[in-house]
Length: 349
Ligand code: PMP
Image 1 (cartoon, rainbow, N blue to C red):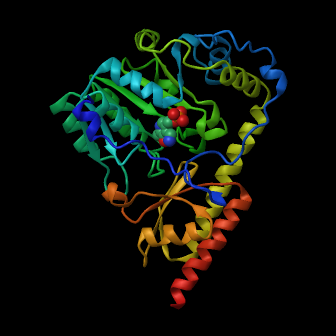
Image 2 (cartoon, rainbow, N blue to C red):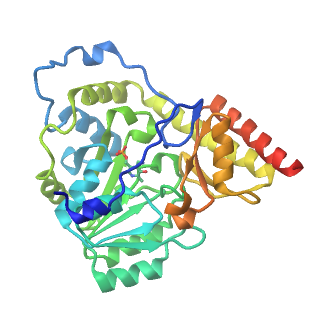
Image 3 (tube, rainbow, N blue to C red):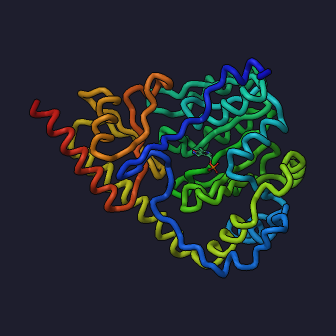
């Protein structure tokens, strides 16, 4: 009854066990209180605003683009689906990267060209350009900063990819708030084939499922034809409108705290000297123990109540790497204490 390509897929896996400190899902450690005023006017018997007009108007000011350039999704995952459905394949993306580009492409029976990152997790630009010329992908996804490696890619190389490609290029800026590299938003008018993807999930709104693509009005209009009616529920719209209009300062402060805490964690962990730590422009970073298997470190952290993300054999390039999401200052201090205990014990045994 089920198509072969679906039978072959693995579902997107999320850890759902209970533990003291969760540093495994790239969420923000800082949430916001919901004001009862914000949701008081919602009528449960009425559909939401299908066009999310108020929300798009606020974002249009924040991002300095017209509302017609913004398309709203129930998380950016939904928009990846729409983009690939709109263009068809082949779909090209560097790997390892966000798994949903591949999962969605395969679920739609589209050909995929995952191009391995080099050993420093930078783009293999020659291999990408060669594949663009040979296979003519109809859509390319570049997550910059990249999940799960944490680094932002060279901006000039991304420009080159956009210029060489005849297909659509989606620059996924899910983690851009934590990076000091320039955004591609200002280039939307200069290219025919560029879309920028944004999400509010990493800055404190993951529960609301708010993702966006920003691009030329004619492309947005075509992709909008695929959008399911009323895809953004009234609660998410109302809460986001209220918080984005009142809490910009708190939002920015939280981002600064996360960047500060990321740098503190990396500095303290580097001093332990038993880990390779990969540079990060995100709210998470990768570590690789020098004298221990990644799975062993993962298990020890879990015994102490800390969940991080391990990749295991499913992603050979990340074998032995663990991805650590930056938590709040107390969670980070607890994580550091656990790491010191584990690595000191290791040194004395
Ligand atoms: N893009 C990247 C690079 C991500 O890491 C994620 C979430 N892990 C998403 C998109 C999806 O975000 P959301 O659906 O929560 O908006």
